[in-house]
Image (tube, rainbow, N blue to C red):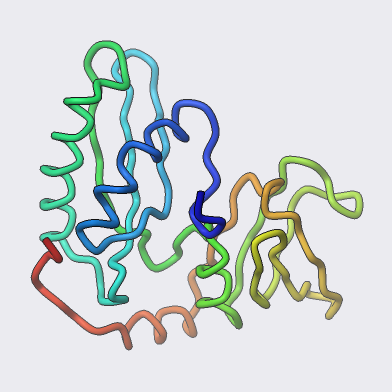
Length: 177
């Protein structure tokens, strides 16, 4: 398995394994899979364009059709369920080392599964990541290396600098497939 793919467990890992080859063949990258709800579960798939261009509504529509068909054939969930496909958004989750490295210099919030240095929540400037750890510079100027497998969630914080970086992304109004 590619070490820079997002880490999922359980049902979400099974779904990610089923859709990732199709996503990649179409020129997209998986950012996150989440399943919410019990009565009628919602499968949320968050993806990026591999070419780095802005992810548009046309991309959502194309992926929704294609991934919906893949999941219908695989039938990974019993009963009725709903599919939602989206971009990561501006204040995106940081799920891969490449996300941590791409957004180095921006502010992020991180919640850990297991406490690190006596705490589970951190806010700081993203310094980058490798396959094992993600690094932040905390408000007091200290730096911390967090084990990526122990990160429950990490997300960019919406700031003026992040908005400016997003505004610089190229537009492409056509899906990749």
